[in-house]
Length: 132
Image (tube, rainbow, N blue to C red; front, side, top):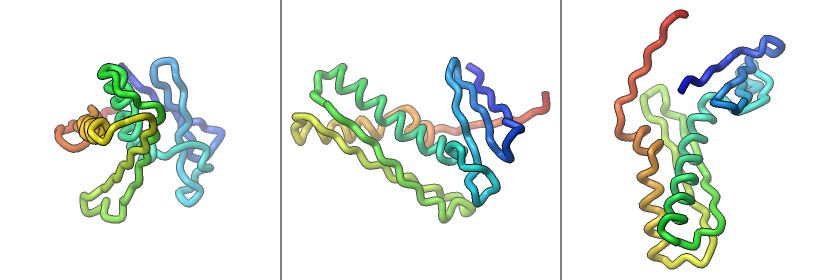
């Protein structure tokens, strides 16, 4: 699958992101010289983690018959040491439904195993950049 990112030249920094049949807007913040018309690249990175945890938990609960009714995943970023190689993301799960303590603990454990969490923490990611 190819994701394309194309500059919207009508704006200083705005980008149009195409993923399959979906279109997203990404932009820099006002402080960075953008219009803040959409999430930044860091925001999208962080959102990928929260989204993966949410999708994984809903899928798992459905598969296991766990009565998960509501779910919200909060992701808080601490990038104060990013230049030193430390980028910290804290996630919090807000779950509702008639869940037992054991089911809540089971879902917490599953959230730590979502594919993006594992990708971010255990995989070696190789990135190459070339000219077209």
